[in-house]
Length: 368
Image 1 (cartoon, one colour):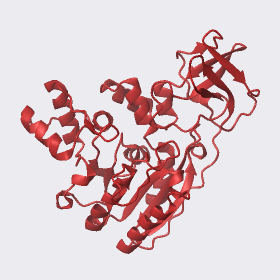
Image 2 (tube, one colour):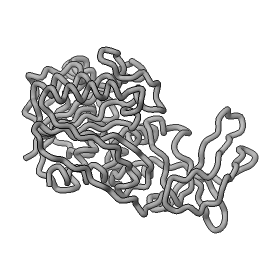
Image 3 (cartoon, helix red, strand yellow):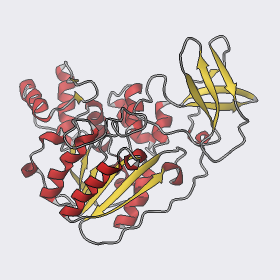
Image 4 (cartoon, one colour):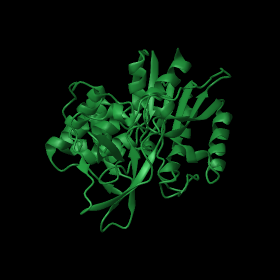
């Protein structure tokens, strides 16, 4: 049985992929502090197994020790106030075998690990982020990757899987990326990395990500080639979804070109909401949607131009549609939604995930 540890676990994209392709595995631990990620992870991957009762003070002490419900973006705690919600979060934390903040993990507490996955925060690397980088001891969210070194050196998992944005190998960050590879080389890993795009893995989203597989010997690994999908955004739309017609009293829409290109990311125009200082790009439903990111909540989720009975409407991708273009199942979506995640949190979880069909093909090459 493959013993898996998911660092920066989110909703467990890696676990979903292993589950979907029938790998015999056990998640022996995860590391995450996000309140809503933990609630979603628990709802998706567990069945409400009983957890030993603790007092409110004991649960809060555990949260403090592990930095549970700490929001790195705001620097504030999001520990719930109601006892019922504290208990729910605590049970999710325990059932998930969560070790909390990766900075506080005592490696002596960790079980044996065969596969260590670390999709560390891209906030300071992504073109859409603040470009703070991930220098050692820079205290950026992205620099949390260096905390993984302690775990990897101590436990020496046979396999490592890293995922991050394409910009990690761009000119501003390649030096630090190579430093990280040198660390892994020093420990004994052979490293293989490649830029993969979600739209090559049966998912109608243009989402380029660097994947690195590291193996604790000289085993040869080849990345899946993938094949450009025939799916378009039209194939993942809900049957009954709130749309809004182009209303010239509220906004102006410039149609740049006809919606004839069927199989690629396709911007067709720009939406200008009157009173706003910026335009919103609009994409054809006959192509792929743009990359989802963790800022896709509120008014920033992708806008899609849909033709219905000869009329054009612009619709926002719904939370369920965003989960679908990540390759998440509808069943997993509703489990997370029923765990209490708001629409904005569901958008956020989609944007911070890893495309599951892409992971499935990687794991097939690695383990099958």
